[in-house]
Length: 61
Image 1 (cartoon, rainbow, N blue to C red):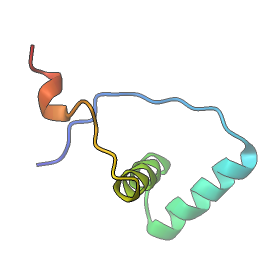
Image 2: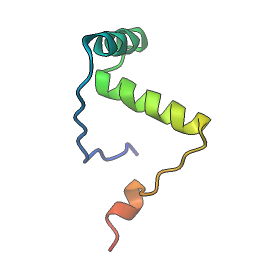
Image 3: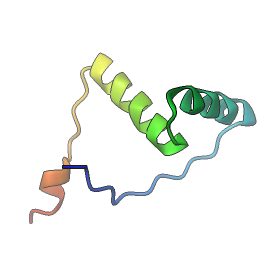
Image 4: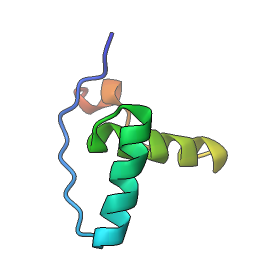
């Protein structure tokens, strides 16, 4: 089952960073948003990070 995406992230960056991101996304046949997700998840895995809030627990009260 695909993850439900219900959060928005807006960033300001340099033209160089955006160009590098676009090149990486094109190489992987991904959107910019998808490429950012991949990069963050790869970093989190290497750094042994776990999300404090998961998609399942967001709806629980």
